[in-house]
Amino acid sequence: MQIVLALLSTPAHALPPDRRGPVGSESFTVLLGTNTAFDGDPATFRLTLQGDTDLVGGRDARLALAVPVTWMTSGEHRFGVSFRSSVIEIPPSLRLRLLPRLPVRPYADLGLGVAIASTDTGSWLFSDQSQTVGWMTRSAIGLELGDPRGLFFAVEPFSMDTYHLGADSTRVGAMLGLGSRF
Image (cartoon, rainbow, N blue to C red; front, side):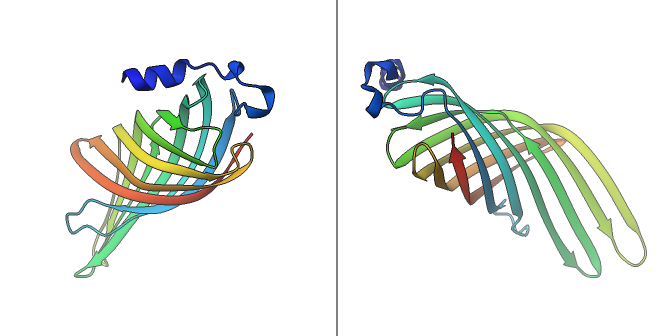
């Protein structure tokens, strides 16, 4: 923890102008991916639109506020009955991004927010739909690869979402995407 605080306290204005990273920079990223609960449920499709803005900047690390808005869907068909669920997730997160001036920038996210779930069940005899609103937690690790002041490729090999929607469930996933820092 002391190392992270020391990295964040190194002022970016102490660097010559040509060596400064994007202080107070923002980014927008579009990510696609999948996740699973490792419990026999089908894998899911995820689409995330995400923005972030630096809160505290240092030469070697930045602390940012990231706001991912994710749509997740999954479904399956068993014995003539189809199950489909969709979830909208909005977990504002703190993001610690290391080496903000380099072409490879690792990051870690930790967030808490809202999840809105919709479930459809149906067959030729019956159909049922339900909606639930609850809260969720999110953690992730990833890399931004590319220009620290322009287009970059995002790789998020690990994320973990825990949903508290009456019954608790956890899903682990991975995502890839493109973003731009300005």
